[in-house]
Each structure stands twice: as structure tokens, then as C-alpha cells.
Length: 249
Image (cartoon, rainbow, N blue to C red; front, side, top):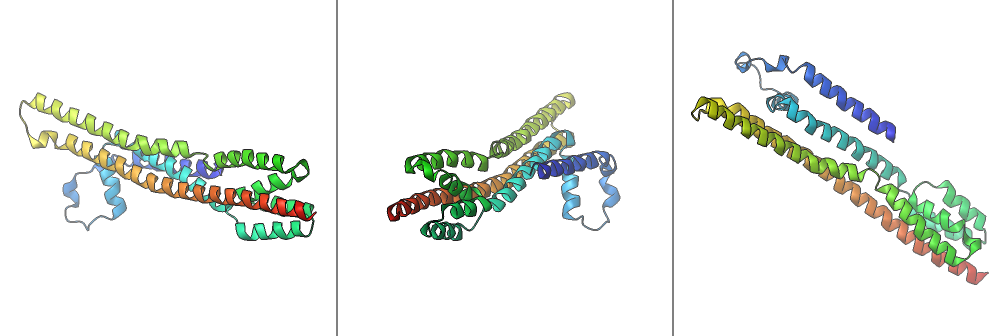
């Protein structure tokens, strides 16, 4: 999955370089396009990006690209980690009922995902006693939960920092506007309009970035909560099955 983040980050950097190399071309006077057809969404976004001053917009765009790379990697990993818990528990229970612990261990070992990992960790220590099994499951469950949350701290950082960068561009733009007013000695909308546009656009792009990443963040949290609940349910079910298995033996 690290390759996915690297590829998406590389794509984002290439996009940044492409925007920078075409910056001068896209600064052509607007009067030349007055009779042209309405620009598409991509064209509009690119134009607004340039109007917002790339030196402030690039950091926001970089936050979006890196945040999306982490989010996509997490979503793919979590989807791959999702397994059919009900069928897995049924297969393990059938093996235990038949008195074949080795088969139950092999079923859990050959199945991907944290739920199967919990079952394997418990079944692999059946011979050491039920108390050891419970402690092992509890400890390993904490480790697996930490793995599921890998990268979320960086994603939350980008969610927090993107609007901050936008607000910084806003403050700098307003400072520039007041500096121009002071130099001109008069409040002329033509003098301060460019700085005000930079201020507003950086804020908008920062907030849009934060909103997009927040949606992905909440979706990832919901997936993690679902997997953690499945792990806890599987742990309880495994202990019940082992108690039943020991009683029958």
C-alpha cells in the first residue's frame, strides 16, 4: 500500500509542476476570451487556482493530494481486511466440534483480515489454557486496532492544516490590500480587488480541501469501528466455543 501512496503523491507533484509551468500562459488578459464559449469546470478551477496566487494555493493542493493518497490507501486496506465473519466463525466452530483444533487453526491462518488474526491468535494458544487465550486475544486485538488506524493522524493533520493555510493566505491578502490603500492614499476598489480575491480564494480552497478529507476520514473511521466490533464479537464467540469444546472433552 505504500506504493499506492507514493504513486498518488508523484501524480500530485507532477500536477503541481504542470500547473506551475502553465501559470504564465493562463495569465493572458481576460479580454481575449470574452467571446469564447463558457469554460469547463476544470478550466474554471484551474483559473481560480491561479487567481488565488499559486504560492498560497500550492500548499493547500499538496495537503489535498497527500490526504487523498492516505485516505485511498486506508480504504483499500480496510476493504481487503474485511472478511465474512459469520462464515469464518461457523467453519471454526465446526472444526472444534469435530475435535480438530489443527483444522480450526489452519482455517483462521488461511483467512485474511483482523478477525481471522484474532481467531488464529487464540486458537494457536489453546494448549496453554483459557486464561492465556483471553489475554493473548486482548493484547493482539489492541495491536490490530492500532494497525487499522495507521496514517489517520496524518490525515487529521491535513484536515486541520488546510483551512489554516487558507486563512493565512487570507490574512496576507488583506495585509497586502491595506498596504496598497496606504500607498495610494485612497480606497480604490481597483487597487485592492486583486488582494481581496486572493484572500477569499485561498480560504475557499482551504475549506473545500478540509471538507473533502473530512468526509473520507469519517468513512474510514466507520470502517475501522465496524472491523473492531467484528473483532470483539469474534473474540467473545471464540471463548464461548473453546469453553464448549473443553466441556465436551
